[in-house]
Amino acid sequence: MLDKTIPYAEIWMYLPQNIPITEPSLPEGFHFEFYQPGDELDWATIETAVLEFEKESQAVDYFKKKFSPYSTELKQRMLFVVTSSGEKVGTCTAWWKEVPNGTRYPLVHWVAVKPGYQGKGLARAMMNYTLILLKKLESTSPAYLHTQTWSHVAIRFYQQLGFVLSDKNLDGSPNPDYLKTIEILEKINAT
Image (cartoon, rainbow, N blue to C red):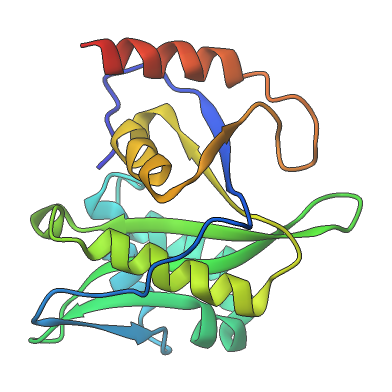
């Protein structure tokens, strides 16, 4: 869940290619499913629940603009964690980002678990599954993810998985928010 009480700064993180990835293991009563048409509503519900969007309609609009043109890709890249009753409670996508020079980077994208299901190991299992997918689909470089200081709890989690904060943007340019991010994170960790 986003913590919007602290200053905002953007940061890129990457997972060095030599970091081993653990086989994903979900707790009993949960399973993985890949995106199927119609799941955009579940995606919107999950992302709105963690405060990425104010309204589900905004999330659906974003999905239609950014993801819907890639329906074939979504079926092998967008992952959901589903309860035994069929409720989708978490999502993560093995995506990519292309920078202006045409280089395409593997990207862990839109990681979220509904608040009532956090702390059960679902995010760790999703991340591991997604990283394995990225190694199969986009093995050209380390995996990257874009985040912000409002996700400081997630940043600590990503660091536990082996992700490293980068002082550069994905295109190699300096990240003007890097020092601000480090300062904010240090203050949070000191309290």
